[in-house]
Image (cartoon, rainbow, N blue to C red; front, side, top):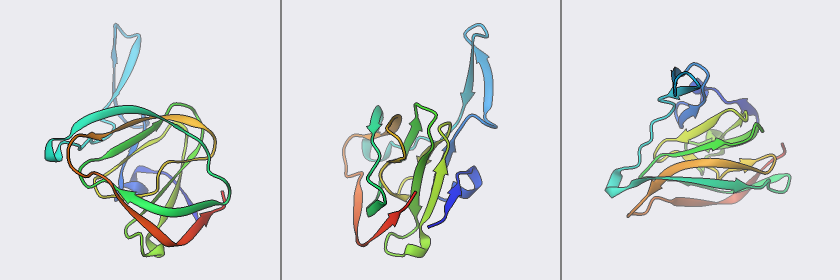
Length: 157
């Protein structure tokens, strides 16, 4: 599978690329901090959902990386933003049963992603151990749908 560079345009069908490049920004705290605003659309309020902010500590999977399932969240968006400057991978698709719809992106350590509601994606894929800020939904309702893949794929990166 070809690895694509993660760009806002290439990823738009699946969600937002969360990065400060090109973002609205202004100074705060008496000009000792610069705020980059409106980086993603947090969409979590369906069925009484609330914003959940957490940190995920991720470890690399054995190589080649076996792709065994895809998941989506029907009730809310989901943001992953790295806390270290390490490249990582983002695997998405339109239909988990159609391998021709899969796209693999390489994100920089200064790019996060915000999956739209119902965007099929693989769980977090890191090349090196690291931590991520996660902003997603908590609350009532079933916000996780997983599809096991009967024919596994592998990522060699």
